Length: 77
Image 1 (cartoon, rainbow, N blue to C red):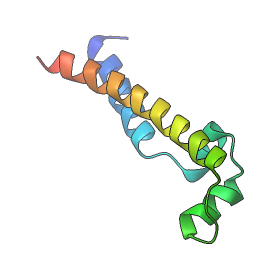
Image 2 (image 1 turned 90 degrees about the horizontal axis):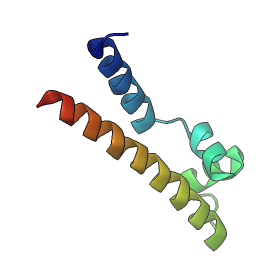
Image 3 (image 1 turned 45 degrees about the vertical axis):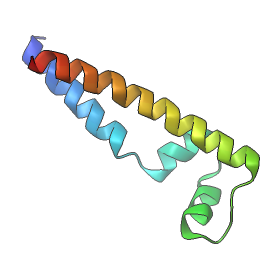
Image 4 (image 1 turned 90 degrees about the vertical axis):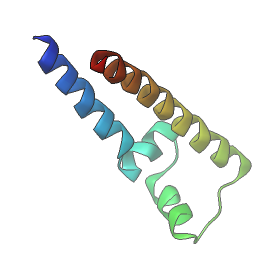
């Protein structure tokens, strides 16, 4: 795989990471999909534990995005 193809894959991964499905976020957070949907719709509200689990999953995803952005940025210079 050449550098162009590798960076294309990095961009593809970044785009998939930034637009996850609610199912993916629920799985990453260890929260039932139906629960996450209810939170999203405003029908239920997350417990402190649920908020912490969701925050942890989102922070992990943000870290991955930061790494991918740095790799793309570095290649652009």
